[in-house]
Amino acid sequence: MMSTSPAHHGMGAHWHHHVMNAQTTDISRPVGDLLREWRRHRRLSQLDLATGAEISTRHLSFVESGRSQPSRDMILHLAEYLDLPLRERNALLGAAGFAPAFKERPLDDPALASARHTIDLLLKGLEPYPALAVDRYWQLVASNQATLRLLGGVLPELLQPPINVLRLSLHPAGLAPRIRNLGQWRAHLLHRLRQQIDASHDPQLIALLRELQALPAPALDATTEVSTPSAIAVPMLLDVDGVVLSMLSTTTVFGSPVDITLAELALEAFVPADAETAERLRGMAPSSA
Image 1 (cartoon, rainbow, N blue to C red):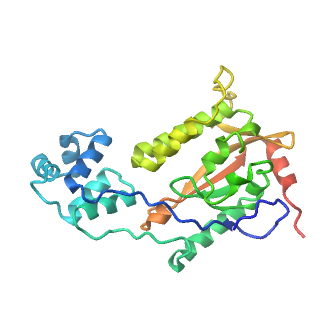
Image 2 (cartoon, rainbow, N blue to C red):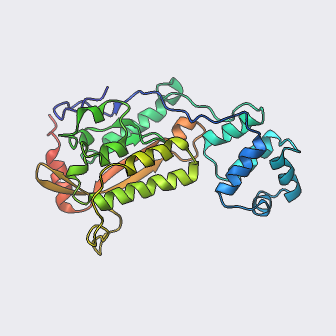
Image 3 (spheres, helix red, strand yellow):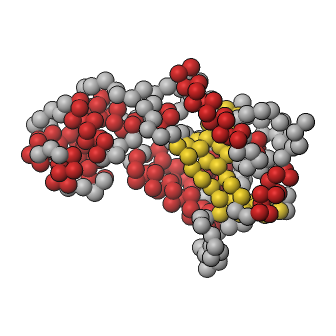
């Protein structure tokens, strides 16, 4: 369990073990229906998909209408072209009566030990800058000490696992009162969530978006949406003990993962947007013995 006390200076990352909420897909629906829904969600015509996937429009039409049963290879081929998340590729295979192609192991599975070690190294290596790992639902999986040092004053209930990082950021009992550009930062986070929903079509993410949209939000004014001319990305301006830190977020994902759990993990790092913030973050870190 993660300690939120800045006085706890253990080495490495703090891991949260929680049950990942698997998306429930109705496998009683025909595979053709699911394929058609994904094709339309991707804004493709039958001709677009058939041409791109190099199959005949007639064959695709038969598959979507249920007149023809696609092979396992055909499903994987179409799913690849549609750029479906691995979880959804498994759902299509299941709807057609095939075994899943991609495993989903819990993070404490021995097979993922090397991945966990890699995340540990990355999180620790980013010190004294805050960094954390989240799953597909933005639930905290692991974090470093620098992250914990920013959480003072947060309502303890928001730090009970599973911790949702977006809720923690935007909730009035979370970091929101200390985010000096809350309107701009909120718009940035909700935009990222909408992009994720567009890619995954996930009902749980849609529910999360609605929940976050219902939280109190500052009125956007002319100053909220304008970054400084030299800005390369949207910074988060966070007040920590009266000092405003300016940090840019970066996202790292595993390249070409074949495990669903790893495919859905993202490492979020907050790097200083200016020299003063870098100095402040270094100063907040405990001196090594």
